[in-house]
Image 1 (cartoon, rainbow, N blue to C red):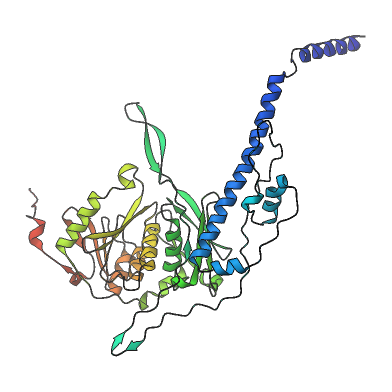
Image 2 (cartoon, rainbow, N blue to C red):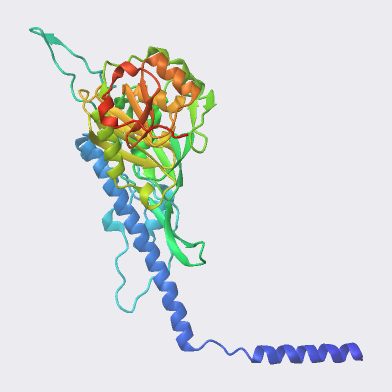
Length: 433
C-alpha cells in the first residue's frame, strides 16, 4: 500500500515538473531555424573560400614553374555526378578540386540551405604532364679568356605563410597594478620532406619557408636550391611540406645520427655534419674596428621584437656597416638558418666572403659551423663563446668576436682578420684601490 502511494506521488510530482516547462513558441523555433540555416550557409562559404585559395596557390605554382601550357593541355578531372547543392562535400571527400561554377550560390530571400557540407580538407590534384628531365647542373664555359657566369637556377616555389610575432597577455606588476604586455608567439612547425616527417622546429613564424630551406641546407640534406621544387607552409596544421625534385639520397641513414646541441630549447644537428667541417675553406677577409663599432650601433638602433616583448634571439648579416638582413626567432639556430636560406637564394655572385654575421646568442659549435657553411669568415656576438665553438673557430681560421657591446669586445680567434684602431676605444679605465 505504502509503495503504491509513493509511486503515485512521484508520478504526480514528475507531471508537475514537466508542466512547468512550456513548449517552444514560434519565435524560438524561428530563431533556431535561422541559426541552423546560417551555420549551414557559413560552412558552404568556408568551403568556397578554401577552394578559391587553393586554386590561387595552384595557379601561382604553375605560373612560376613554367608549366602553365602543360596545365592547359591536360584534360580536366571529371567531378563526381551529384546534385549542385551536394557538389562541394563530394569533391572534398574525393580530393577533386571544385570549380568556381560548381560552388553553391548565395541563398535567395526566404530560402535557407539546411545541408551542412563535409568539413574534410580539400586536396589539389595536379594535372597530369609528361615526365621531366632532371635539371642540368650550372656549367661555366671559357671564351676568349673570360669565364661566363652560370645560367640562372630553378628556384623553388615558396608560400608566404606568415604569422603574428607577438601576442598580448594580462599581467600584474610589483605594485599590484594590472596591465598588458607582449610576449613572443612561439609555435611548432613540423617539417615533412617528401611526405616523411623530419623534425619539429619551434619558431615565431616570421619567415617559415626560409627557415625550412635554411635548415635543410645547414644540415647538408640538400646541396643545391635546384633540388627543392616547393615548400608549402600551413599554420592551421602547423606543418611545412617540402617536395624535392628527385628525392634525398640515403635520407634515413643520413638522419639516423643526431647530436643534441646547446641551442635554445635544445637544438640538434645530424651527426654527419660534424664530419664535414674539415672541407670548409673560408675566404680571406678582414674587419676594421670602425666597421665593428658601426655594426654594434646599427644593432642598437634596430627596431626589434626583443625591445617590445623580449625572450627572442636576433641575428643579422652585414656587408661592411650596411645591414642586409635582420631576423629574430625564439632560437638563434632558427634565425641563422633563415639567414642562410636568404643568402643561398641570392645570385651566385652574392657570396658570404665579404659579409659579417652578428648574433645576440653565444657562439656555440653549431653557430660557428653554420656561419662557416655560409662562407662568412667573421662572426660577432654580444655574448661569449663555448670551448667547442672556440676550437672549431680556430681550426677554420674564423674570426670570432664576443662580449661586443658599446666599445668593448673580445677577439677569441683569428685576430689577424681584425684591424685594430685602439684610439677609437677611448681612455682605458683603471681600478682604484
